[in-house]
Image 1: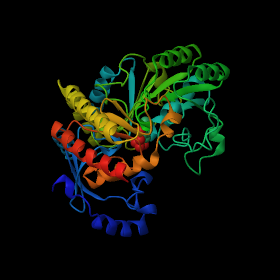
Image 2 (image 1 turned 30 degrees about the vertical axis):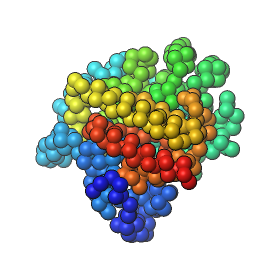
Image 3 (image 1 turned 90 degrees about the vertical axis):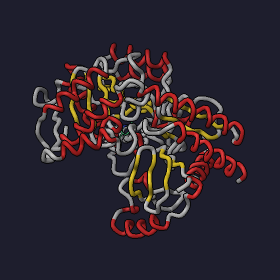
Image 4 (image 1 turned 180 degrees about the vertical axis):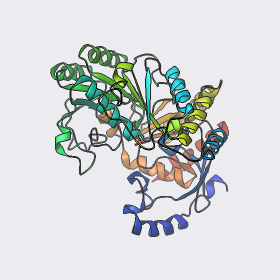
Length: 441
Ligand SMILES: Cc1ncc(COP(=O)(O)O)c(C=O)c1O
């Protein structure tokens, strides 16, 4: 099917009619409902850089499983590893040799980390990392940054993308719960700060040092479109947290492996703990908590912080992670990703400059943000939230019609190692036509 033929979604619509009677909203995660279409797309399969929906439409995928499919869909090494592991009996809740091997490989790639624990989802890791940090410091408070996302757990489920009329002053934001059902008392343990504001950081950390267990952040805030920390902010964060006995946690669930084979910021600043998820499983649900030995040894059974889970280090998932780590450390892996990024980002900038009112392409490694109405790099959530959301939604819809699948409700996107330069060229051709449609409207 050619890229320009995508259009009807009759089978998806019919499945949605069935699904909404048995699943709230007809979906299993709220972000899968596409508000512009009025229903989710139902997919049949993925292959490399492409998704195929139940109507037979082919899309070049720039959602890449919300960042989990960095190798592309159905990478042969992942499929072979998973198949082989499953044939050993699909056992779980036990220790295996490959876990040790994968832990060792991860520690070689993440300097400063000395021990690992595995879990299944990203949400679990942030929740556990904060529990471990609290056990280690004997304190309860957590600082998180506005616009950063750490999963759907009740501990830090605040101010991911808060409505601006509820978010409070920019320099001292309120903790706005991301969901109903989060006890307000949890919010009393969370202080929200603006990203990249050294003054607010220093003031808060010094004032609350006696009660703060951890600062958690996305080292590159991909969830708000790839916002980078300034060098002075990073330096202040590391110096202050060390001085004040506050555990620095890097949530690398979206950033790890997207810029190079390890932490997104390289060795610029080493955190006390790191959490990984998504890509590290090659598309399979495995996640990991890494950290300095004295902190990680707070985990039970050596320490008092209970960390458990039937599916932790599930052998099938560990096999997928093993295959993933081999692939990303092959020579040329990141050269290919960088070549794709250079071509895509330059092409998008050129198109948007020709067609749109100001629009900013924030390409950082294998993920990018696309902000309509901005003419410079955003420094924090408030900058990103000032974009023209209606135009963004129109552009995403216009791209979808032309076979380019962008994450419909968010400003962050990505590509995989399975994308080829020809896919990028096809994408840019579709985006050119999408931009023309949006501007004409
Ligand atoms: C930075 C970050 N942390 C945590 C999570 C939660 O991961 P999961 O959806 O696997 O629970 C996500 C998911 O989008 C994320 O982007």
